Structures are given as C-alpha cells and as structure tokens.
Image 1 (cartoon, rainbow, N blue to C red):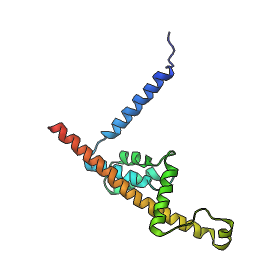
Image 2: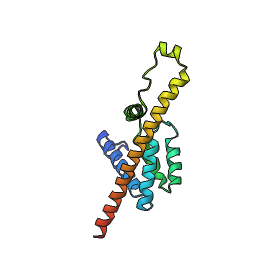
Image 3: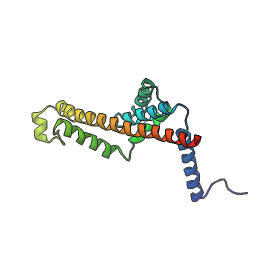
Image 4: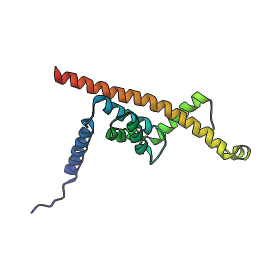
Length: 160
C-alpha cells in the first residue's frame, strides 16, 4: 500500500490549488456588485489602521454600516499583514507628518526629560491616525471602485 503522505512538490501544488479555490470563493461570494465592492473597501480602509487584533472586527462592523459584504470586508483587512505592517505604517506616519508638520522621530533622553511621554505619544499617534485615514480612504476608493468596475465589466462581457 502507498503512504498517504504526498511528496513536497504535490503538497505545494495542493496548497496552491486550495488557495486558488478559496480566493475564487471569495471572488464569487454572494451579494450585488455594490455590496461586494463596499465590503472590500470597508475592509481595506480598516486594514490601513494599526488596530492589531481588531481590524477584522472593525472592518466587518464598517461593512455592516455601509451594507457591504462581510466576508470581503474581513479579507480586505489583510492589506496589512506581517509583511506590510512596517512599510504601511511608516508611510502613514510620514504622510501624517507631511500634513500636520514634522513630528517626533524617536524621543531622545533629553526630549523625555523636557516633554511628558504622553505628549510624544499623542503627537506620533495623531500623525499615524491621520495618515492611516488618508491612505485608507484612497486605498478603499481605488480597490473598492476598481473591484466594482471589474465586476461590472465581467458581467457586461458575459451578456455580450
């Protein structure tokens, strides 16, 4: 009898096949084009904020408010993931600094003696939140709108 274990190459292909099936399931999930696009946009928007552990919950809650698809909202939050956290939040902070003026980099000991730590935290946090909101709005509009256009285009081609 043959062993049930698959060679590494076949396991890799099986994993890719499973991933593809899951992505297609998300792609074709129920809802109107608008509901699907709003759900994705809600998830992407919340994924741009550094609310670790709460992004999916907040994305689904926002999708409920805008009557969007909950599954796609949860998936959209993965715009931030362990590979993108540092560059995304660094960019968001830099954008916040560009909009509000330069903010603190890393506090030196001298700064910590002169300025309370909570003030440095608010200065940094405010810039990060503002940058996250702007990046989230732009990303949500681009990805949600692009997804809606793609769905509309595919439907138009199917009826042609």
